[in-house]
Image (cartoon, rainbow, N blue to C red; front, side):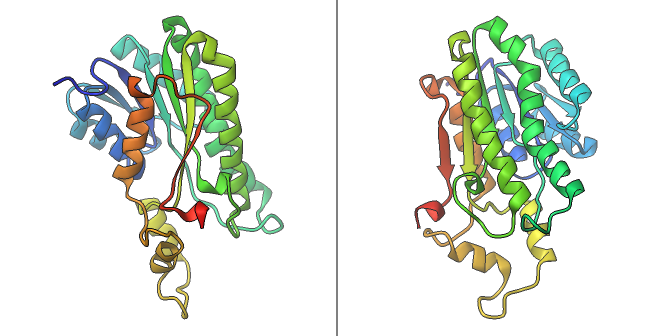
Length: 255
């Protein structure tokens, strides 16, 4: 039976670990040619090898105009098309609005919001020429509900959601769709490192248990669960879905 992305060409940013890795492997399993893009060259190469012969590895800083332009060009050269972009790459950040430094603010905005914009800008001409394409932008529930002490991260993710809607409106007539995924806390290497650096809460146990307790389903998300939603949005199964914000958070934003 044909895979859900059979014959399609996809780019996954932040493919070296976590949600990006899970998505790159799943996309390949479902028949896609996958460009595994990550700022960590070794991690990108390892995932591309695991994804199989139809995958390529690209070293990409998503906040770089030159890198994202090259990413699109090399993907097009390798596969002859760009059918889907999962703009997933990101970094963590902690701090209230008055505490975040300008350097940290600009770093987070550059990698998250500017990064999604640059990646989308790089692939849109090809998608418009093809008359088809799906862009999946990685937001966060921090874009739709308030979460303490992550001012720069929340602002960047809110901007990504707004940008996804704008791309959907502007490029829908060209056959290009754009949707945002807004996960709750997902247990990834990035989250694990972040929590390990924080002090434990004496009243509520470790940070992981405390975070899990805030989700009505009682646990953190898994990378594979977010990857499956990205697969749906990248595939033709979601052909009438665009400009939507897809919250996948174990019920946290409903609580």
